[in-house]
Image (cartoon, rainbow, N blue to C red; front, side, top):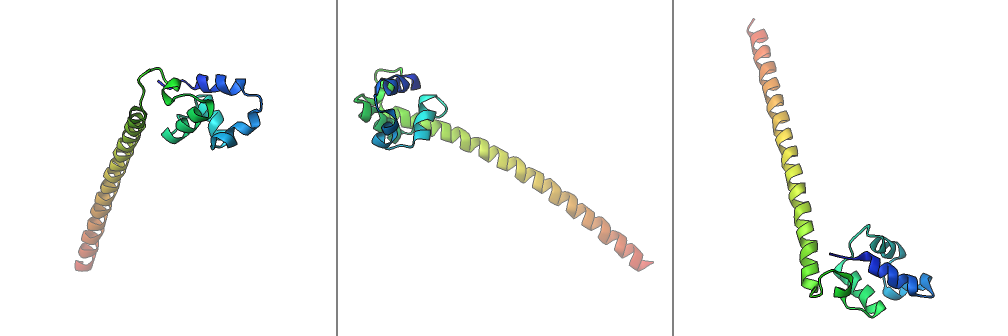
Length: 121
């Protein structure tokens, strides 16, 4: 599991804090969001942070045998879950649209039948 508090601890030890985001190469907002656990860092950002503080990427995770591939897989798994939810939502929308189209078709058919009856009378 990612441990953002370790980044925050290292950040607090630095003397010139306002230069850290530029030296790392990420925005101040992203760095603070990562440190506060609001977002998970990308593989690239955690590599930059680790390099800046002279740590390994695994230092910021519970698992001592952490690898970039494992982190990337975690990100991909979350993306897959997100995409599956999006597909499910869009399928529900399609079903609703199909119901609406079906109701409209029935309405048109009813109007056509009424018109035919009126024309015949």
